[in-house]
Image (cartoon, rainbow, N blue to C red; front, side, top):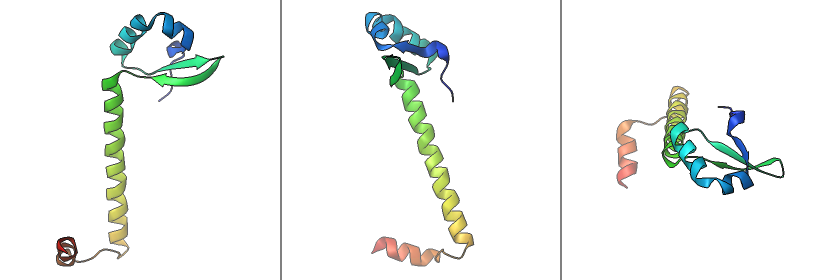
Length: 90
């Protein structure tokens, strides 16, 4: 995902018009980069969009873990199910 150049603003501009910027963040759901002295300083994002992003990251991490487990099993690093349950119960 790239940042839209229309979503880069100086921090001072954001501070002067915070209410309007918050409305824009809610409408677009797109993150906004705020700059200080011309350099990116922070990223501001509407709460639900941020939560959606966190949910996607969690899903991708789960998928990566599953792929790793499948690869390990295919390499013979697995254990029988009854042995795994015995270890879990212990």
